[in-house]
Length: 441
Image (cartoon, rainbow, N blue to C red; front, side):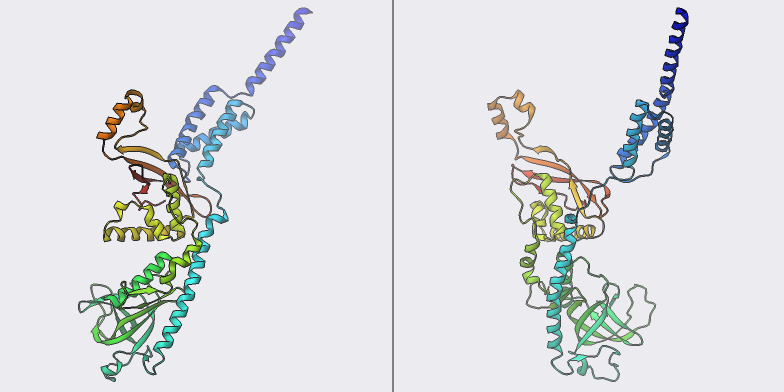
């Protein structure tokens, strides 16, 4: 009887052990699944927050762990693999943040600015139209054009013409050593607008400043409205291509006076103005915009991380003066350098308008490039106070460099592109400045 009882206990124990083993995955299965899981985790790390499609090895990891989880739902080792796989697979969908209404406020700001400045443009445009129409016969009907064989040039030259289908650079072409934009057609007649001197460049550059500083949504290529004075007539081929396939046409040459971009802005040539023209409201632009700025100056003790955040804010809020103040003085010394800065400002504006809406920055990595580093752990450990003072005296001026990584997020909250490194420097413990302002977010 005693032996039977012992055998029964042994049977129960074996049954229990077998049942426990049946609830556990084989170690070799765990090892093989983890091998593939490491491939998935490595692919996720390489993606750096961007969405990706799991490759063959990553897919194999998901299949194996799914199978193990379904067979052994209570195995701790399988559960650990499942949690790692879940985290890595979520990474394949792309990194994300929650986009708040505050992050999108700058888009409302652009709308407010464009509305305010269009009111100025509309007022100036109406006043200008009233002025040139105040003298009977001073403004010609644009189409059909006056037939050059039937009218005396003296009766046409000096008259205003309003061209509502002006399209630059789409209809630009060269003729007789000059550059023109044609408006019209063979059946309606042609106007050839001269765009080789200040009468064009002044108003055109003013429109570009409006797009840069107020509203990036300005249609390039028209249709704009151009007001000009007729200056003569020419026989030209109104075709942009170098190889001319059209026949020549007579057309009235037009000297630009003003540009009106419908529902956007107005700029009139002014010979006394240093820039040749201003867009409507430009003279009081900063006083209008200042009420919308959230950051107005850069603190002397600004950190590299905060400076990069401010840099992004200046772009979103169209604060060009503060944008310039973020950039290293060494990058702003020549007219060509300033032209490059404005070019990249335009690109930054376009990206915030179309590609992403928010920027986050990571902790800066700072190192000393030149000069004495008072925080150097080896100097402070091995050198005496007198020795450190000597080293400081004989060292070059201090130059520190910081690298700050940014991430950009679109309006859905998904990461746009890869994280981007930004280079900043400061000299002699003065303020930090951005060196590579052209780097996108």
